[in-house]
Image (cartoon, rainbow, N blue to C red; front, side):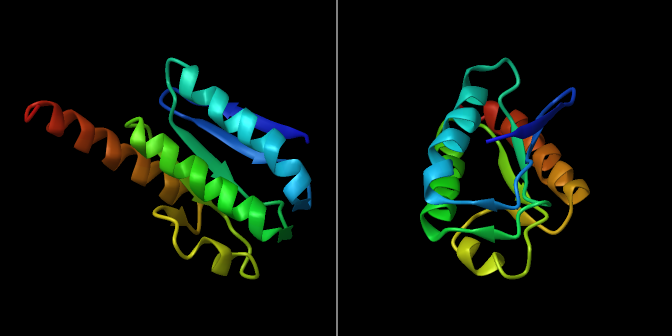
Length: 120
């Protein structure tokens, strides 16, 4: 699976360069995404802008990865999801129409983490 990685100052944008993600491909994508939890800046935006079809097991894997990021106090936002794929992400916490809105969520979550440090 080919992915484009755009590293920003506070997060990385991962863009699969495929037109579909099948269950077979989801394991590779999962490994790529989990590798970001080991980085200095682990926050990720997963842009599905080029994805036209997505298997249900692949969608469930992406949601599971998102949950793992939040359990580790890291941000993970999915953006630019095609209309035919959106129903697969109904249970997902953070799905935005645009990458810009995903940036906004990451920034809000960063502020929230900073504020919550004071309560620990």
